[in-house]
Amino acid sequence: MSEKQEFTFFENVERSFDKAAKFTKWDLGVLEQIKACNSVYRMRFPIKRDNGTIEVIEAYRVQHSHHKSPCKGGIRFSDEVNQDEVMALASLMTYKCAIVNVPFGGGKGGIKINPRNYSPYELEKITRRYTSELVKKNFIGPGIDVPAPDYGTGEREMAWIVDTYTSLKPGEIDAAGCVTGKPVTQGGVRGRKEATGLGVFYGIREVCNMPEVMKKLGLSTGIEGKSVIVQGLGNVGYHSAKFFREHGAKVIALAEYEGAIFNAAGLNEHEVFLHRQKTGSILDFPGATNLAKNTDALEMECDILIPAALESVITKENADRVKAKIIGEAANGPCTPDADEIFLKKNILCVPDMYLNAGGVTVSYFEWLKNLSHVRYGRMEKRFTENLNGKIINEIESLTGKKVGAEEKAIILHGADEVDLVHSGLEETMIAATREIMDIWLNNDDIPDMRTAAYVSAINKVATSYAELGIFP
Ligand code: NAD
Image (cartoon, rainbow, N blue to C red; front, side, top):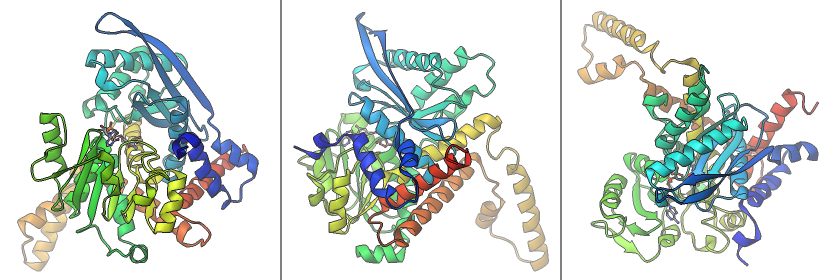
């Protein structure tokens, strides 16, 4: 029997949790409370299809932890959605938020549909009905539970959600904060779309800048020249590939569900994206070789492998054949606990999902704060900074008698825009989280891998906030 059949996704999250719990000081009861899913809402509702038939839709919202409010986590549209998967993803959100110090409890939603099989009008009806079901049960709101995009959803769906919510809650002044990942015109924040992929890049770059870690893997420090393979050319995969390429890495292979392509000289993700848009497939991309199966990309020689599609793609069945030196888990749960054991033996460093893909929730936090403060980032200080910097340059020029070059002047004068501040906040968050987890891992010889260290960090933080609430005196 394959590992996938032996353990569910939620059980695998629990297995990783239990492995780490041994390295903490908390009582069993505290650990049980942290692990448990607090609320699970399973719903069914009908929609009328474009052809006149009625279809019953299955959907979920899970609030894993209420140790902080609101709960936070994406909504997934996939025909693989089930209660166990949503519970697993909601749990990961709790740990992820704790690691990156984002003050939310974990949540997740899912609708069991393949969005490719529905028209935009049908998808809109499903999304709006799902939102009103959440409102009815008090499962959504800026202080209750705040969804975001995930697999199969994006800005468009978030715009439908905020519109439905605000129409049902007239006069609620902070209503825009009921969901994040919205288009900028609907209260979104600049920098959210690329946030998860950019966070993946920042996290891996920080790991690659650690000489002692790179030495153990037989790699040089830095990103420049490293070979990268990305599975999944959706929001997270596309942006991860983009930032690696822009910083001097070579994206040698890309995989989508219809197949995979390889080019040792490097692929440009945007050109591949346009080719796929035109032809309906990434295959037959000019200059690249088609691989026999899309999973072949996971088993090719490379420095960094980025699974950015779905969970359980590297299991005990294929982990032995993985040749990457570093795996950056951009998706949630792409590697199973049994695969982790194999990576240890093969000296492969697996950088875990629960903090590496936290860029999305980090920038969602910034968006939520923007919605509550009702002011765009940078609006108050941009002009002030530019005026002040102008005065400093003038003073330096008059004191030294030398002129600052036009290019340098433009850089120094620039006051931060919203996107500059969001990227800077994200970079700081990812660097701090990487260092915190590495500190736990490298200072305790018994902790076997980075995932366990990440769980230790998360468990300690969630338990501490329960203690601060007086729940565990
Ligand atoms: P997406 O729907 O934008 O993209 C996923 C892509 O993966 C799609 O293009 C799909 O065709 C492709 N895919 C599906 N099965 C595949 C297979 N077997 N092989 C290769 N490609 C395959 O979704 P996304 O938002 O990029 O999310 C991807 C993963 O990242 C999910 O695990 C999600 O939970 C996680 N994640 C997303 C965010 C976010 O901000 N969107 C944040 C954190 C984590």
